[in-house]
Picture 1 (cartoon, rainbow, N blue to C red):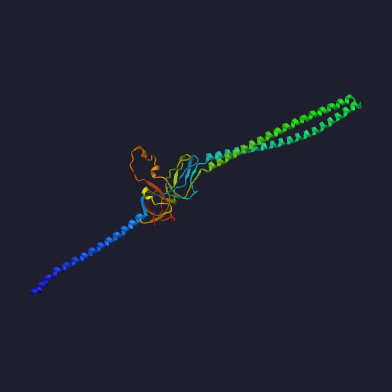
Picture 2: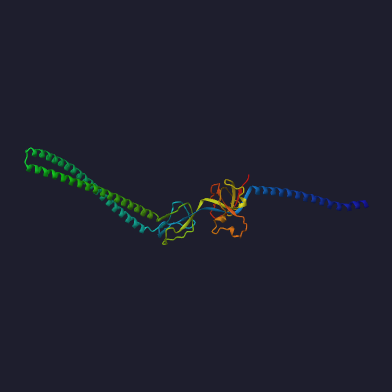
Length: 361
């Protein structure tokens, strides 16, 4: 009976010992698993860090086109509102065209006057050419008469020497020859004058044509200015920052509203200069926008800026002043999307993103 009691007393002392041993084994197994998992994730993280460069200093960029009037005037109608989607060439604003319509009418009248003056000058040129042709014909006729009179004078001079004609007849022949010569000179002078008048008329035609071309150009310009009363969208996108209302007087070049593009967007990521060692155009990029957590967008490095962002500041740092503190600079990197725009996850200029570039395979 004492032996049974002693065996029973030993059982409780052996049971806790086995439990401790089992627990130690479990702890060791868990520790080994934890070390293995930690090593796996550590190695994975190290491999990822060695082959990728990350930054959260990145944002979406895109085309934001200002809508500017080319002519001053009063706004007649505003056909769009903030955040409205518009297409390129769509009418946005109408400017009251009454004053420009008057300028077009004035230019049209001036052009008609110039065309009439040109027609008159061309008619005068034709008349001058006809007069010059008549004068040239008269010279030929006078030349024939002068030659005949000179021939008659030579003949009568010979006849007078043989006493075949009287002195009075020779005198008449001489007078006829002198008259024919004088008429020839007069006709030649008229022909020269007529030719000069042709040149003057031709110059007037040239001047009238130049005047007509100038007035036509002024009319085209007036019509072009009139067309600017219709202010249209330069690109597809969303209307933003509308600052115009009907009845408002606007100046040419005044920003009335802006249109931000939804289709042509890209990412500008500002990487530290130490991250650019292996970065180059063409490398794959993944990025997430803060607006769409968990949605991964893909792109490619298109280009790397030629200077750090500080170089483009209004007051760039001057390290030669003596106040030098070495600061790691950032360089803008342009990333273009390698996928079609997602209508359910629209990227808008100004959105913040986290970008990751794969710099090694």
